[in-house]
Image (cartoon, rainbow, N blue to C red; front, side):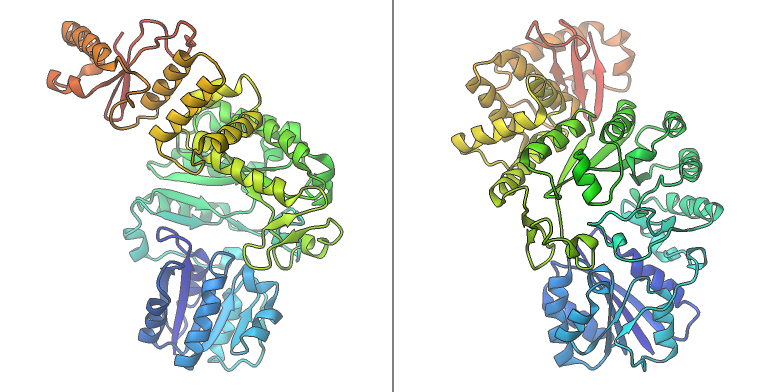
Length: 542
């Protein structure tokens, strides 16, 4: 019996963890199993041909928000071309299975965890009569490791997904975990350590934990982090945290972890107490912001924090307060997300109570509520675009910190958005030269000190290790300044340990920075101090 697992990922560098678990769970069966991963950008004809070439007896497809539209098109084509049994699983079909079966009578839906359900289907040689299958799964600790040796040997520079636990300790009403019993099912911690060691030796760029809340158990989280800290690897480990459970001991352990080894995604969501009660999320916003600040202040790990616009009782004014409280915690990245009314969630059944209107097709994003209008949400989408350009890119970190010291970050983004509308600036651009020119023009428009902003932009250019030379409008006299710096280098090159391994011929490739404004902060660079960038190396020459 030939079984085909098909993943349609959002990006080519993504991988499907769920199907790997299913494949490994069938390892001792008599089925001939194949796993194919394509993307939602793959032409439909190529996807159909891939299935046709394998000619499976049973086709299993995992369905998510990002690929459901493509899969609906695919099902119509596959049905007319071949007679294999088709099974759909994943969060996008588990909670509205009847609707999918009504539209596509040829399918069977596997609801929720699928390992034991798939095993039963194969055991019965696809002769099951049920249209919805949901067999109880064994404990998660009995589920095999999802990756093969072949996959690990070719994992260099890739993202690998991993989970040390399934389920969630919480029931936020906008999350699928609110719709069914989703108790936490953990993997034995010694086994977790062994598997992380295996992944770290693969040479993958990132191991991304998909645990709903990595630190729900503080003691367990700390033990795993200590193990990660001791690994001899360049792999980065991505962990999702709840800010309320960041303890003093957790912070102390982080201090001993190598810089860059960890990357954190932290759900902040809202600072409105009435909103948090309405969505069944319990946290103290000030404490949560303080926890994020404590991790960010370590300056060792990338911190990504999430917000959700469009939640019940959160109007535009309230969202501004939420945003600014989170921004004050100093995360590296602020993900301004928008509420999605996922089928099967508790909030879907409450949408009339809160006056929620949303798109009927994936990703089911909110359009307006009793508290926030379509126009206001549209404006937040524009603010999100300019946030990505000037803040989340991390290329203008000191410049934006300086600009937002005059007002809140949200007010700055609103002001930038208004000026962009007047000047015709494309708020979605990520081009450094274009964004820096826009910021400089904006500051000139505000009748402020252009010299200091030019210094901040040049400083960000150097410390972000951008390639090439400064844009001419930022430092018109740079060539003269560069010649001065080269003269200093040639006079003292023998006594400078920072220049070891660099020949004098290479000095011309240096990019130099020294503040021209008397008001530039000394904690970044003192007057007459010179910073040099060479390839990816930063050092002081004076």
